[in-house]
Image (cartoon, rainbow, N blue to C red; front, side):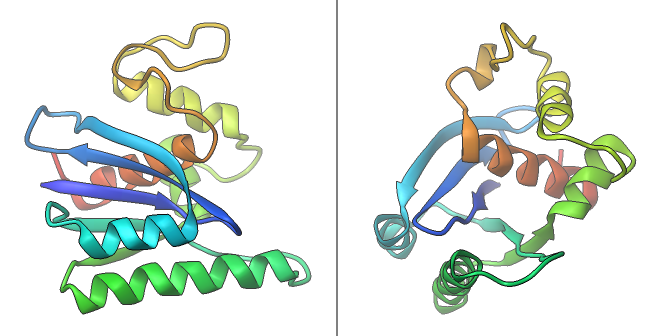
Length: 157
């Protein structure tokens, strides 16, 4: 299965493509951080996506303009997938913390990055991912964690 994992943002979104047929751990076959309009065009044109897992927004404070903008792009990505009959799974940040760390209390981005590195059997070198995850940074790490959460939650090997 070709799983596209998305961390939507206000102006740009991070993404990671995983091919779950290339190995038991889901081989990363692409990643990037692209402007939202360019990413939406990519999503419209892509013919090789079997499923999309996307971070769903949650808000524990007051709403801001950037939150509304991010929500708008989340909705656009979901609409494109619906139009193309691509299954779309929404994953909340809380779900990522629970699936990867077993708790939401005190979980930081570094803990999530460590769990991704552990899953793919690569060390963190000076805080950066290595091996098959080398070059995955920033929003891409969040997208990778969304993909790992999807695989763990739905038993994708």
